[in-house]
Image 1 (cartoon, protein in one colour):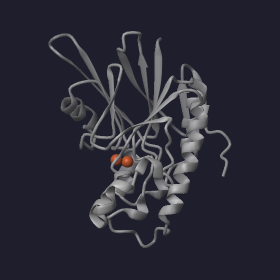
Image 2 (cartoon, rainbow, N blue to C red):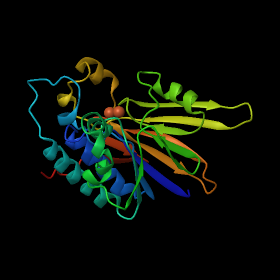
Image 3 (cartoon, rainbow, N blue to C red):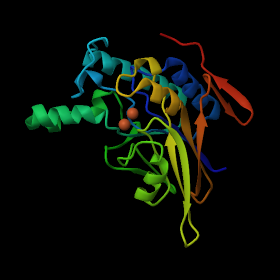
Length: 250
Ligand SMILES: [Fe+2]
Ligand SMILES: [Fe+2]
């Protein structure tokens, strides 16, 4: 094996599941990948959302959301050690850009989501609606597809190896070409908290949404194998080893 990259799914911080997140961080510590990609929607940015707010949901200040994002980013950087780091922005991080574009377009150039979230020079960055190419694999938050067939549709839309988030589902699809190439699409799941959902029917979320993370393994030529690593009952199994949540620090 030449290289391994782990892919952090939609976290929707601070509405993430602390146990699932801890399990993902522990997996990164154990696997020691050469790279870590965050697939976007790491932040929820509920406080600046244009959607109607649930009055029963606790009011959260934008600055508190940013503090939570910075805290979890620091934990991720610590777990990743010497791995290279890359972020592909999601539609939720893009809420800040949209807010500024709508309300104060004159200063839009002054607002930088990356630095507002405390992501420094160590992080490679891809804007929403674009993709990051590494070896023969590509990473993006979404191509506008959702639902049970998202992996297959995204593979058809993209036409190459593609690793994506957004749907909160774990999924994989394969398709060859008549020239003998093999392409894979990987939908990397979710690390959110079922109790914090107010944007999807809870029953459907409980049945369809999957905790887990993505794994991309490369050979020396850059050819890659894409896998989904599900977290079931708070536990992840990798090569016969069980990884579960470490003690949760507040
Ligand atoms: Fe998401
Ligand atoms: Fe998303």
